[in-house]
Image (cartoon, rainbow, N blue to C red; front, side, top):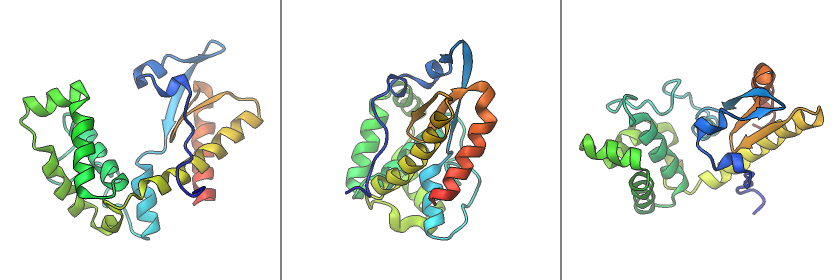
Length: 191
């Protein structure tokens, strides 16, 4: 369906670690990267007409954000939105963590039962629970793709280079404030 997915794929800058993206320059000008923070979670709360429990959707009571916990919570939260069942979510979460050597080592060294985070996340984000294990992520990607397209079109139409990494953008550092304003504008217009 044209109402599902639609993200922009293929650019080499999407496949490199973020620390390398920070070294990209446009015509000798350093760049900055901005993203729509917690975009899919924010979209779900808007769809439910509810307020986020905190500014950081990945800060879960009982888990916290220390160490790599925030990164693990983010992985889990996005997987439980994308997956169509709890079983498939657990499988993809486990694969993601096991194939990331840094996360795997963190989990192993701390004897972390990260799958127990699922129930804490479900409690914290109870207002949007109907979207968990629903496969909703593909529809949310369609919204973030529309936002990305609007942001890209704005800057390319005025001759300013910009690179898209799904819901984040790399732009010349001196254009960061402009990017921030346009991202907010396009978010409001699309939503």
